[in-house]
Image (cartoon, rainbow, N blue to C red):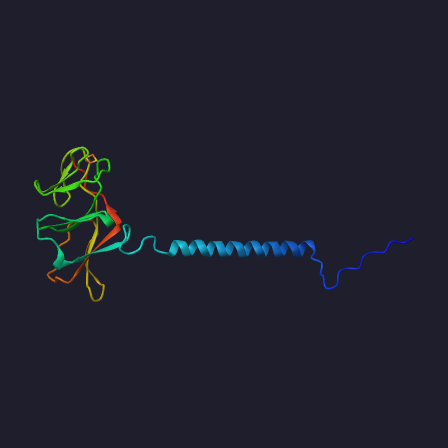
Length: 185
Ligand code: FES
């Protein structure tokens, strides 16, 4: 007796090998495109938010600066000391350039002193003595117009920045741009 063959399911279309490979290739291409777009988006996003360490931090206005040669401002949130001398304003990184301890300001001696091995630095962050191989690291300081956000002055190499007479001008520090202090002999 002859065997009956089962009828093909109604409406079902067979996919041959070539069509299957084309579909698989297109699916892979789509997957790759989505991944590349996602990675590109992540890289394009700023890594640090404004006001956080690694981003731009607004210290305050020129009028809020400490008097010239007085004690510096301590800003632990963004790992900064802000000093104001007759050379200008400097933003110093809070970590000692010897082995990474947190140094302090001494009101009595008017120096930055590291509690770990005794390195000392002046108010501008310049090396005085101790095992630290260089002056304190610093960040780029900017003076910004409070109305337009235009940068009026900048110290790109971390040198003290002279501030303008305008007490309302903003002082900003780019904590994403750390500049190594000068090595001493
Ligand atoms: S870590 Fe500051 S002197 Fe050694």
